[in-house]
Length: 108
Image (cartoon, rainbow, N blue to C red):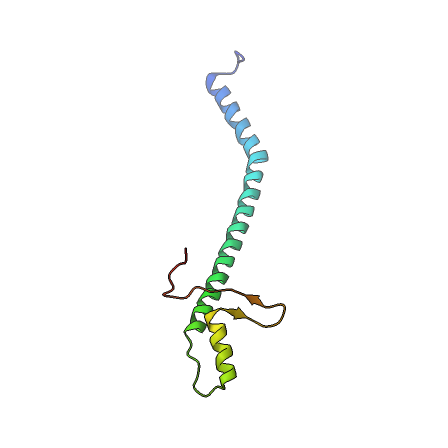
């Protein structure tokens, strides 16, 4: 290094240059990355919360008993939906969906 700069002066200059470079170029990139990461984590948390709400509602609906005063047609339709064999009707129906319920063993 230069003879007129003491040893502590060169260390101070290097640390100041590093601080300025980091503050101007590296920190903004890290802040943008952190914002993206936080947005991603919030979206994943929202999806998880919504999925758990749906699963909880499905489990509660499957546990509901069919009332005694319903017609045989309605009883058959409710029993069919509660077993998960068919959801909806017509060409746009989703068939073969079996939703998990408390006490159901996982299928392998």
